Length: 268
Image (cartoon, rainbow, N blue to C red):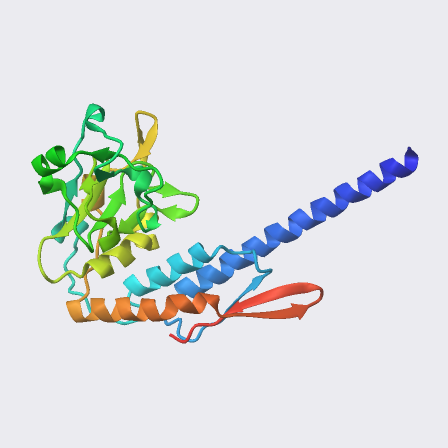
């Protein structure tokens, strides 16, 4: 029994040391990511992470998007006027379709449960019939539309915002999901989607609770600060991000002192 107690105590110490190493690795990863994001010009800046699991790819992706909309990937010269999202975007909120209208088949409704990360998830669909769909066709979505979940907009895996594809159609917009609509032709929706996924948006919203559910409103979003580059720069930024994001799969691993150093290198 004394030997067993000794071995159990050793296991406890080893587990505590492992947890401490993982915490230190996470701190190093966050510090590296902050250094990357805060660099005046992060071109060709490599940053190292202790162990392959020390940082989630979604965090790195968000940092890249943040650099993009801050003008650190493709420099732009916005005008000096203070702007908000509402200066450039209005939102269409979904309709409160009655539950007694729901059918086992027909035209699907885009609910917050269907809004995933970048795509719509139809594993749990709700439908209305053609008659109801025709009556509320002003809530019909189109290919290329962006939909933002207003209920539980932030979950552990990221922001619930998606782009509607041809395969998602036809479908109608349900309440607590919003569609941003540009007020003019100088805003590229692809750029606005980058902004939504960046820290400029994600770190600025503070979902309160409506009926016990974390919730944001479109009015809150419209009041947020927003810098709009010229249209040509928006498109260059989108192209640069699309070029960079596949590079997340390019990882170098180097063994050092029994640990793994993971280096992400981006040619910006």
